Image 1: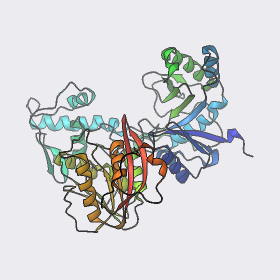
Image 2: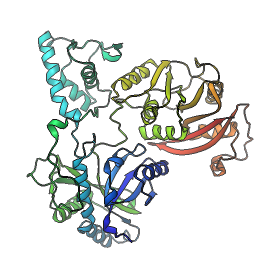
Image 3: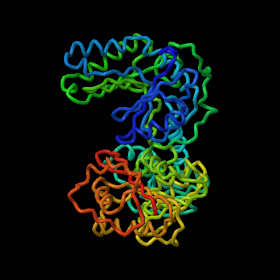
Image 4: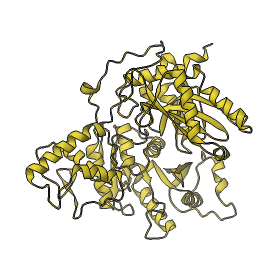
Length: 515
């Protein structure tokens, strides 16, 4: 029987309702079956010899991944404050809780995966050079005092402050298949990728967490290969402290009744003192190499070190996202895309679902349509700035009158309107019946449709459409059984429903099949 210390403990966070999909993906990609899930988290124990953190960082259905320090049931200690604090501090004073941490950090340091803990933040590393190039162009063109100039320093402050407005008279247009802004200085001497990155930097509406390829030639360090020999003080990737020591800070988050009587600032200081004594790391509150995240609730105490600087849900290949990428990937997973399938998103928006599907499975064809030109422009930009190959096309089309012949689409995947942020011009029930009728027309027999809808719309669809024999009858608990079921004459059956949370919004993924 294998000893406990021969394992590295990992836990990931996932959106509420998506934990089962995250657990399935972990088991499939890491071949590890020792997993369990709880309240937005999935825990996994991986043997040292099978530890591959690059596979963990490649998971698509998760928010963040952590190297676990401790996780225990807090309900037995929360009744007494002194007992609670004694137990908490003892967990951070145990060297064996940090033994596997050193091994995992060494492996992370050896990786050159974008967005990993020690990877170069390419947006910030390239920002200075981009600012310099743009400033030189402006100076040569004599636009330093022009009303239409775009000062790179102002652009950075615009992204960090909502109080600064965009320069007037800016228009968005398509030029050379890359969306650019009119009124900028001439940049014909730069390649398309550089011009696109400049455009993103000058537009505060786009995400500033753009991650490009890591300049390994300049940033690689002589990091040794991972071994089972534990290293007390691994050499940090970058540190403002003394060389040879990792720097860290402690972030404590409390929820529930326990948050009323805990001083998180003092608690962070006490935990930090114990972590420094056990590990030899040095405290750095401003620019630490790593962060010790502690989550305390009435039920559990969970602590770990994030394996990435930014959430893994923020993809490096999506500049401006719409739907959260993990939910989009789960919808693709439920669609069961096969070789040669034609996949349609009739309300594609910024093409998040298409990118998640097209990059995960490239042996199919993907089509997106929308009536909002501004959304299509952002979708076009996302497709052009994606560094990976894909087979995705987009066009302007109405979802109620799709420009496709009958029975030509294999799969329909769509983030349908909730009638909340984007209001419908007609009655919600009428819209969905017309939309599903059009889906049935273009969908081939046996084809599948995956929709993301609100909980209220889910109830309406379950009353209007017949349920398949495989449908879990437990899903009918939320339906008022006294209400008369009025099935519409649509050749669709409901295969399954999956409740998820989008922030504070209650949503549901509904899977249909055309009969």
